[in-house]
Length: 162
Image 1 (cartoon, rainbow, N blue to C red):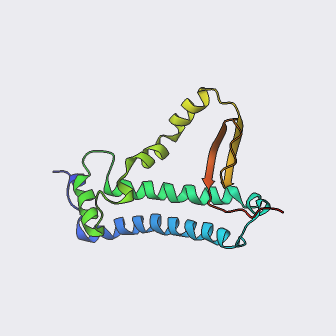
Image 2: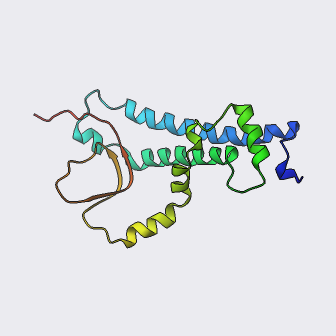
Image 3: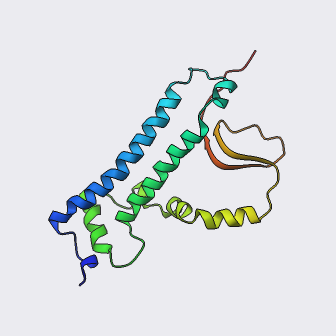
């Protein structure tokens, strides 16, 4: 049995924990920054408030959360063979099972193969409204297709301008 197939030697477990701690802390910090932005909005935000949101910063932070989640997922469900015992050890240590959101490979695969999916999407010939970055409530559909490349549909109830 080679080292990759063995369980984690107890003195080395701290290295895995430290690596995973970075992923968790990075994701939590990102969500705190996003929450801080949304907490600064008035109780009934206007369209102008939504437009003034720092979309790029918000999307960068949300993307970081997703990337860190994918990194954590690989510790528990490795891509390559030969790491099953390590993964099983960590799943027991952290009480993680297939009911964890980290188990779902769909989001992880979407992130890891984004470039390939993006190639196919762009080669399909897109027309309509193009939103490179967008944060806010989904625009009202007017029959023209909309394409959102980096977006977060915030559930903001915008105040009606009278």
